[in-house]
Image 1 (cartoon, rainbow, N blue to C red):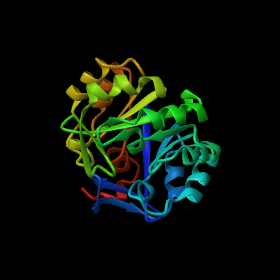
Image 2: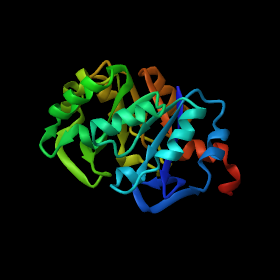
Image 3: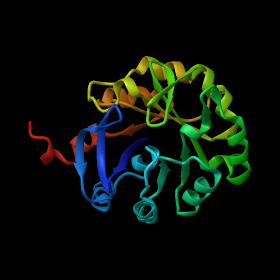
Length: 230
């Protein structure tokens, strides 16, 4: 399944290059208008980048999006209370990223508390990697933990993983299928793949691995061709 991404920053929909807020490949002012463009897709992925970067989030916009469409939601969910709020605001799944980790590895204490508050089927864990090492805090901190070490430890706490190849993110130069194949070797849980997915061949290859494809710039180019003159 293809899942369009709506990333929110400064109350606008953006696409960033490798998570750098100073390198915007796209900026659109109306999240609800973007939502209408994606009406044909059964589910969206919504990430609050402001909250992820430790600033005031955009819960009001996210509530509106969730009220109109099935949305999985992440970004800055660092407490059990916030995760429950996001679920109560209508998110089909809550995506937890940085809070699932400590500087030393997996944050089992937090994840056990989260599992007591929300059913496992409502929880996704984001595992973003640079050169296969887990990156947290808006990709500003690289942990001494590989995806192969992280995913098996995280399995008991979630129903699905969101795995982003930061190396390829936002560049429209293709993704690293070899990395996603390596993930399938360490977990049987569903995986949504993200980061640089560009071509139909890549989407088909991920589907053959049993993975969804979260699409950023490639789908915006398709849905908003007027913004990308050839």
